[in-house]
Image (cartoon, rainbow, N blue to C red; front, top):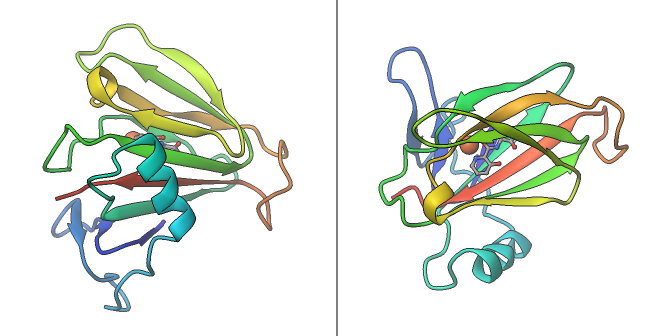
Length: 150
Ligand code: MD6
Ligand code: FE
């Protein structure tokens, strides 16, 4: 896990989940969000309000992500936009209030936006289909999640 942009999402035992300007170990700022991702955000999310955070998650050997809501951002009117790269993932999604969920495959190059009514949907990654792509050196999947945290 790492980040791009002015703010990065980090966690530790002492202080829990938060957005911060610097890498918790190196104390250095995160690298800039590449222009291609800013352009994608402008096209699909909100050209007036750029993202300030891009979380980078690498899934290797059997990694999953439990059902969660993205609610650590100040303003839930801004979408959260993700780009999937590498192996295909089984993405599970259901209503914010809980209840029935369904799954959709996120393949390499797919973009997923949680916006409007779906902004606070519960979602997670059931599993990643190992070997379904050869994109990532060493195998696996990368998900880039763009958002406005503040
Ligand atoms: C993942 N994605 O695809 C996890 N959140 O690895 C997310 O948690 C996510 O894809 C908000 C919006 C889009 C997402
Ligand atoms: Fe999420």
